[in-house]
Image 1 (cartoon, rainbow, N blue to C red):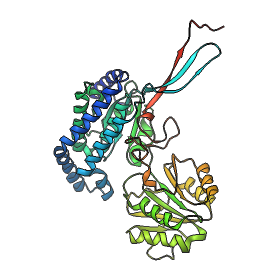
Image 2: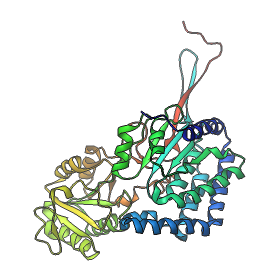
Image 3: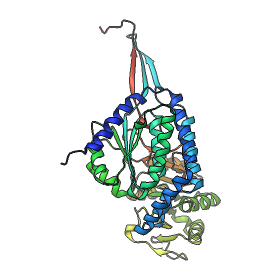
Image 4: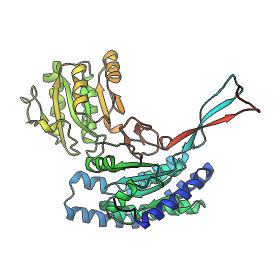
Length: 418
């Protein structure tokens, strides 16, 4: 095994020092830093968009797909959204030191469980430059230092956004090593981060199945799993037609590149030729290529599904569809093909919806709502560092609170154990 490069070790040492300082940084200083970063981001809009234009041109030359280019692209409204997320994170209650629970013991001890930073977070991501701002802000808010390693596709955009974050922490008198960006596209930096057990406390991968799989296989540092978003929408026989049509079309077509975009439609057998046919017609009319299983192939504008179309994250205007007998059949399909990310049911029957919620173990389950709401900002977290699909520590949108652990504070009065 190759040694970790001196450059990455130095970044790790600086991050560890910064994390020690951030653990006791007053909330007001972190709020000031994030608001100053938002100001700096908007003040440098022209430079950021110019950097993004370089990345977009390189991406087109490299042959990136349309969804990948959509993830990469920045414009003035998206920058406004990033700045707004920074301000929203700044305005949230500071999680560090918050008392989760407390109790007294017959021994006379008073015990508190309080939130504490994780320490140093490593974030490895691909083409989304907004992750630079989201991850940096959430880690700062939660008292963690962060080492960011963006993908080569977003290299120039990420550097420009990172500069605004550094300006923010400097304006608040905080260590600029609190938010570090790996300044190389060399893949060796990723391998180094995965083995920096003395410098990084947790790794968060943001990207496709290949990246996440690599991290999970090779990391010696603990990982917050973020697998692909193979999101399902099941339309039950009890569904309200207007709600179902509105939700399904939004879940698939609002944007196809986010991990919360719906990839598979499940239709109750009893409504195939009624509401089911109408929903598929809506999707076809919107330009979605519908790859359908048995029982749906007689509908206009569809194509037969291949076996590999189920359990696949298209991130495009393509959707699989299948017929199921009931909610039990829908859950069986989701357990077989899903990724435990986000799954939705459209149903008016409370009992059936309750069965769906109880019977599945996806990180996010929804009723009569679009899967596109699988987003930290929509959950009120300001932003997210990812959607964790594992079962240890954090699940679902990972915001500032989820980037903390806890410790016990125990107070006595000369108390001794008998």
